[in-house]
Amino acid sequence: MKSVNATFQLAEERYASLGVNVRTALEQLAVLPISLHCWQGDDVGGFEHSGSELGGGLAVTGNYPGKARTPAELRADLDKALSLIPGRHRVNLHACYAETDGQKVDRDALEPAHFEQWIAWAQEHQLGLDFNPTYFAHPKAADGFTLAHRDAGIRKFWIEHGLRCRKIGAAMGKATGSPCVTNFWIPDGWKDTPADRSTPRELLTDSLDAIFKPTLPAKYHLDAVEPKLFGIGSESYVVGSHEFYLGYAITRQTLLCLDSGHYHPTESIADKISSVLQFLPEILLHVSRGVRWDSDHVVTGNDDLHAIAREVVANGYAERVHLGLDYFDASINRIAAWTIGTRNFQRALLTALLEPPVIRLAEAAGDTTSRLAFQEETRTLPLGAVWDQYCAENDVPVRESWLAEVKRHEREVLAKRATA
Image (tube, rainbow, N blue to C red; front, side, top):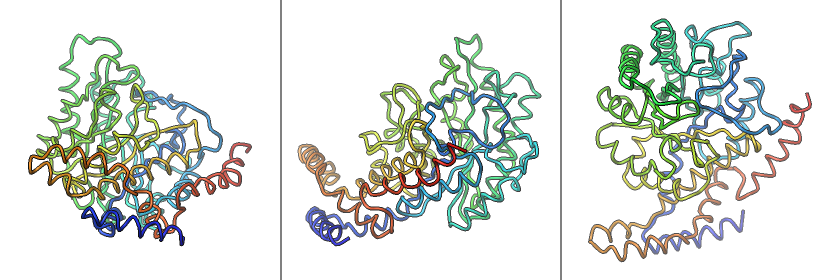
């Protein structure tokens, strides 16, 4: 701790020489919660045990031992991950993580009571909750269509699911005292070239309008819609494309979810943030790392991540952007996956918060030479020393020491699951 303090003081002086108040940056970082996605902990399995394949263009690769098998195990794993991550955060749930006491409860019959243990856990830990309807891994989604299905009966089932999920999200927001973002993503699309692109989008519009018709208090609940470029089994046509949901969100004033894996591999969502926020009051981010396709790799500290974080911070959008993660890697320790991804996102946010004002001032003055020079010189500023201090002050492991705790947990807890 003594060495951490010493290097922090030197870093603080270096940043101050460039007009940056490090303490202010740390105070701002402390109030930027990130929503951890529960499905990293069990490979998007959920607790329905319906036997249906994951489907919906989703695929989880790997079989690392020790995944969570029960709600209690999943919450315990989240507890462990959160103990290794500085700050206070949120947890993002899918509807398939309902707890029904062994009773068969279909998705059009879910109630807030089926999530009361999640809500109690969140209250105990002072966590916010976010929510997602589950429009995959179900017999009524087996052909790849849900809210845009031509069968009115199947559409009715999924509309009811959406209505109930909004009520569940509102109950979560009311109980935790923080608005729950309920995000709608559906897999609907065609593997090959369709003859009719319009009708499914008309049906989806009608379905969404029916779901969002009941008004819910914004202090408890916010609606979001999430586009996608393509998926496995929907390579040629996705009903809920970016253009569809952009238009829908603007005209209905819902949040738009920008998922960093849902666009062309060379396309960053960073540039979209300031464009969309010209027309929408708030947006949701699902930060992921696609490798050649929407493969949902663990978030690393790459240029794309830093660009996303900078757009949020530099433009003063922190209060208008809901930050969340979305990936699932079963090839490595799942608690480590949460920890690595979240800490990387926090470091990217901290980097943006510590950006010297001289960069924007140079641009405003038309001095693009100085802008580029300072952009490059600031890459080697002592961010690590500031991050270490933040971790120490939040009583979480400093530097790579968190990995030893994960390995200990793996030996003492996860290994026993694998051999049970």
